Image 1 (cartoon, rainbow, N blue to C red):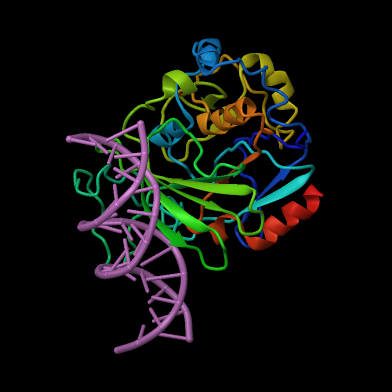
Image 2: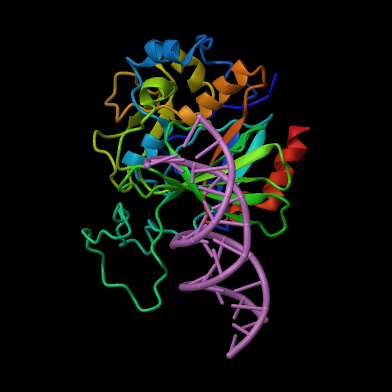
Length: 309
DNA sequence: CGCCTTTGACCCGCGC
DNA sequence: GCGCGGGTCAAAGGCG
């Protein structure tokens, strides 16, 4: 059994060290899959089991919500007691410090409907918010419910494994993702999503499952809003024990909830592996810094591996 | 035929 | 200016 962790971060700003890096201490050894109800035998059954509570896919998180690098929650699985360090954006788009940029870039590169502040001459090219997670998987391309077209593949420096580039095939949607294997641990697939879907998940009907998404307000996509990925009501008691911050107010299942979402990538992968007789994946969500080496600093990976043993 | 992957070429930003 | 590396383009080919 994988010795993994599920953790929810609170509204509190995570610990930050002198280098402006977030430190997320995970302190449980219970797999996120341990606390999920038994997987139904088929995808359709799973939908029927959860559709009343969960309607959207993992990527809908990207479609609806902004990611504030100073307050974001994530769900992670890792091993034993682990300190995860996530570096801040190098090419941050939503930094309170430089603060004034518009996060919602046009859905299409050709669209100019959103007015941005006049760009400085040498201003960096605007980038969509990114969200990365690591999955221990034999399969490179995890099914997240959306349809993707591969448009490139590049060798990665200092890695024997190439990086693949995918674009959402839905017209008008410019979401991209990159998939690559960790050179430190080839069993880990790092998937980085960039952008926001402009459409519902095509596979929502078959992929719905997972976590409810609570916000601290009813608004969505508001810069600075905080988000929780929390378990269904009947699992909350257990889940709260996994919250990294004991000062976090109890999650209120009756509070306003914002766009019920699920992590279809996570659970479809798990289900696929179940169906194929594989061990469930372990997944770690990370805030992307733009480059894989930024996302997963080598030292951090080593530390994680060491603590894994 | 439509959709997809493959892959070399090209573009761009950045550091030296 | 040049080289390097990341990211994208687009033609060609495969597949159902």
